[in-house]
Length: 148
Figure 1 (cartoon, rainbow, N blue to C red):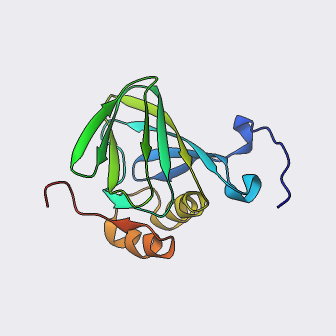
Figure 2: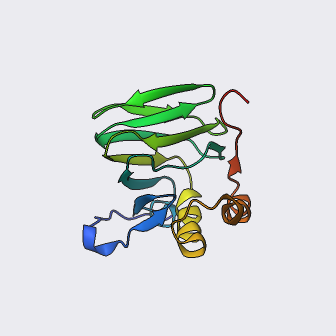
Figure 3: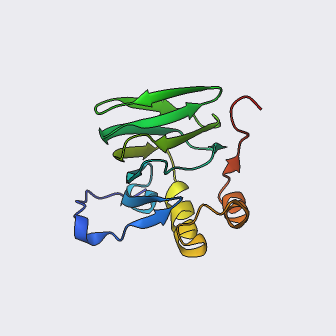
């Protein structure tokens, strides 16, 4: 597995529009051969429905607040706080403040291709019927909302 150091500059990446938020791929598993790193930001209320996937994920809040659903409970993250979400854990989030920004770190390939396909095929809408076949291709499964 050949890997090389690299630097990411803002102008090198086109932001993706996914479920009301803007996602910038900072490091793709094609380049790292392991992890993926994203800058995610959006207005209040933006975020995905509850779901699961086969990779671990962590969020580190840079600006604003984010409500993160973890199974049956929800936690509010503020600037400087991090949450770790093991693979297979039902989770989702909503931007809680007028704007929020966080880094997300994934333990394996998968999310970058999923986000790219959603941006191309769903055009930033939160259209669940259009999202389902894309999610299935990428091993992402929608989870029931908490309490159901």
